[in-house]
Image (cartoon, rainbow, N blue to C red; front, side, top):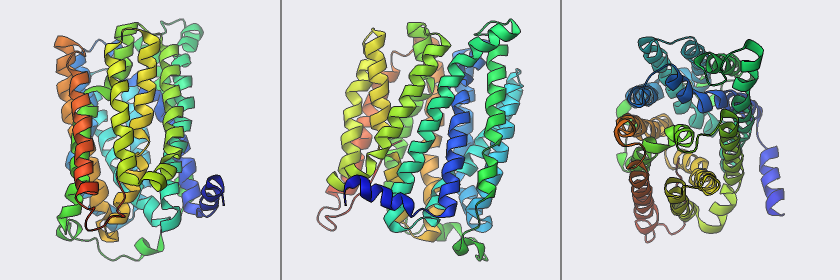
Length: 418
């Protein structure tokens, strides 16, 4: 059987819950493209500065850092399907609230709700997919789900880039005004709420529907060794990514003066390339082993990050931006799937929560610092920080999952980035 045939064979064995979850991923990925492209621009259009933007960007991940483990425990108690349903409703409400707010306190409040909903969704996604897939098709489900989300995100970003201009003509407003951005964000929040319906068609998994108690925190975290190894590389990557990645739309806007439509197209193409790169993940893991595949793509992304930051020509900076994103995200679902397999079922909530804490928590702290650095020195120091930390994270992955296990388990395979 060819590689394509094996891939399709695994996809055909997805269960009903997995198929409905893929549809949910498509709808949510499409609508979140509106927020991804325009949230930062909306906040700046309201008259707030980069430091205040940094606070708002960092707030949802700070909530994740504080709430991930308790919500992971709650997921075991009430079921990860139910958690997803709650999370989608909260996320839709938070997006609509942000779009309707202009006062800083209200924006912080709805950002907090967004952080809670994002935490609920993120600690539930991986365990839900893990319990609704077998070992043979699990890697393919994680990879395909990420790719579907990215492909849908492409269309959302593309549409978000042109909608402000269309609305400016229809309502006689400035295409880069707060009102134009607000209308597009309202559309995004409304569309996101539709993602709730595919999840209602799923059913509770038999292994969780009969659970009478949630595992205790000590039980979920024991033994801690593997959880810490999964945790630490994500901490380092989170610090590096949080300093730069959430602000790349601002970087392109301020450095090259891109109009929204061009910015939307650029980020949309990024989503397509990320989705395509993700689909190669299972093949790379089979060929090289997961740790080596992850380290390779992460290190390959570093030169492109340098091109993005230091080449003053937009075409080359765009190439650096696109290649960096595709490479750094190619192994993300492989890492998550691996983590779900390396821990016991009663640890999945804790593992998922700790990965979110490591990624989102450090990203929040880094984004908060980044806002103040941008306010005083622009992006000058941010690119070197991210380059060094990405490289260090690859070194940790090598230490934990290749060098450290070559003697005891030469077939061990793992790890991905963000």
